[in-house]
Image (cartoon, rainbow, N blue to C red; front, side, top):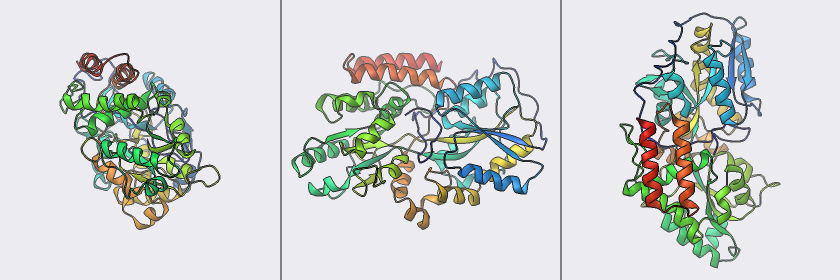
Length: 429
């Protein structure tokens, strides 16, 4: 998965499960941000591409009620790295071009540490209304800098029809059960030649996510709560071993070493996978009768782990107020408006992105519209937020380098884990 903005019909794409590690010198090399400007007036919101036009409609309603504080949307590049680069360049020159910025959850620490965004005042939003883990992605050093808007975690798509033909009544909760289920499916009608399982293993952010989830699902952690890497622990090695063994024994098809989200989604939709780890956006696409061979034949469950249900990576997009905005009072009000229960309810019923409002995941109407929500919520309850580190991109690059070496057989698990431990330790210092 890339750190990309959400696309129409797609849920948020997500990454690392690290537990902490804010750098002590964060922001020290940057000039202090200007004093808070509580001005009011028109604002510009930098966000992702609004293919469904749902956000445009929400903004239009705001503009009707705030003629002197109208909102203009600016769409950032679809590619997450390019979107981040554009925002960073904007902040580095202290531009007031953007008043509200949509941040991938993993960027919050960097932007807060460099004083590019303002802390949100207490009471601006109802923090008790959010999915707790999503709320944490907007925090930095005990303060809320960005309001959670979109959230989610990886889920397991599975072929209900093939499992039923093999006499399997429920999706697997462990890796061993998943392997056993695949063996049974291959002996059952329609199962011959169908690959077992795939996630995202190309050398990009998705590999960081899948590795992190494997580590967590084996009881380990990439970083501990004090910010120290723990990738050479027995549990972390077990997580990496699961991926390595998967490629060796055929649980994961060899071609999946280049898979990103879309390659895996297509393989599942074309009936070439029994199990597939991906994001919530796949549900709508795989359900299209005209474009999917598995429409009506699949289910959604939390991802499996070593000894029980696994732990996914929590991702999402948050809304923050630029420190360089001249109309910060209006910007704050708009952020509070967009993440409010009333607006999230309206937004949630108009499109399929998983939102940050906890009540939506148990709402009967929402569940009827999006049947995967209970499984997604169950997965989110066990999911871990990404790291509170400024040098996240370098951390992710290091993980991709060493995990790729392991799953392609260039390095044994012990060596890859040890070298990754040294690399992450250097980045955390």
